[in-house]
Length: 601
Image 1 (tube, rainbow, N blue to C red):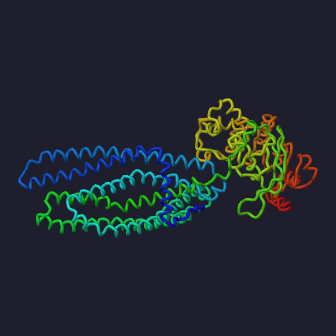
Image 2 (tube, rainbow, N blue to C red):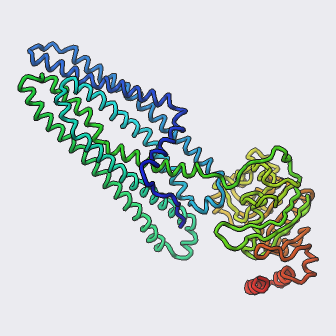
Image 3 (cartoon, one colour):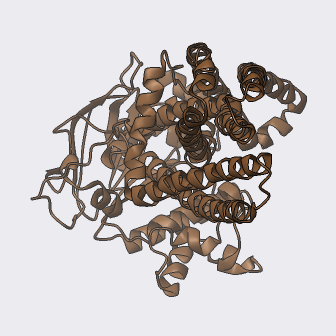
């Protein structure tokens, strides 16, 4: 199972730095956010009016004056006004959280579209799904909920302490000594929470990666009767996530328990000392009640301080994981030259091309050269791992070739815009991937507005027309995930039709006939010859019956061209190709093919 390599943050600085960068996504909506923040400030003033008016009413009644109508009306108005202002403030702040989350998902998806094979070899699909869903949800929660709680805490502290000093400075100062200890404890817990949150997110990514990998390979698992073993493997991954979440929960629970304890100590202090002030006549009873209410205003947000720290730490870790992807430079740089031709005619020249995969000691391609002119077809043959697919990927820059090695129409491939290169050089990959969409949408994936006649023409050329007509919904037939409802041959023919319909100047076919029978293969090859008389075709095949139609045949082995020529020329040479033709013509068994590969390897 592939796991991501995100390191646990070593300090809170990295977390806060990542959170600070989130402001770039908040800036477009800062007016709405600031309006919400200001509204919460107004709401705190209305909230403060309730204790103030309560004190007025109690002091009047203590003096024997029971005319408290206007304080009561004032309290009612303050409560209603606070409700309306808070509702407006919450709507604005939560709307910002929702739009920021939307923008983050768009940015993440856009970044992933630009990454290459090396990136997806390092990070699993399950990990990316976790970042797209769970991590962004944490940031949205921080903005929508954490910002509100933090604003309330700040405003309540400022307003509450201000009125507390007004009513009784001595009683207020008595509550200040515990504050440094609260701050130090919050600092300590925050650091622990950061490490624990990073561990939780990493284990969640592992859980997503394991689930995605398992479900993608469910047919293999069932065919090999490994269901129970996979359940046990999943239990270990699931347990690791549960353990990390449990550890984070312990830290959060300790913080949540500490704050109510602090509130109880404050209440006892006020009751003890404040009660004496009331009894001695130094503090009116109404002012004492108001003071107590303001203490609750200050202490109440601190009760959820642990929850706030948890939100900020987890969102900080999530931000770090997102910016790890955002900051990753695309492996294939799109830096075209302005003088590159707008239309490709189809001439390919590969000059002394070599390539080694990162971490490998052996060359995948070793000084490969070829020339393909418009209207010609080149077939590439060779055993598995000979470098055929590596060569094809470099022509369309799915893998970046070395400079000055691959030219199209005498222009280096890196000088073309990637969009132009990949739209005018149509690659039909070895893996016949289909989307879980109607068959028509799969065939017209690059241009859904294609004419129906063009769709049927491509389907006919790929020998898919009769198959489609047998489906109850024909072109509207819904294809399951990765084309699971189609056979291997049907998927290959569907992806081939998707390539043919583009009518590109250069068509690259990476072993697209392995799952079709010889009769179907002959039909497709004859259609290719008819349709592409003036266009270039480069195809990979393991069958001599396919390669023999090409104008030129290259035989690759261990990254090198060991034979090159037409079908007749290679037969006359009596080498690997000639032996392979004999074995396949005589219907040789797999053992004969393996012996042939060993003989020429």
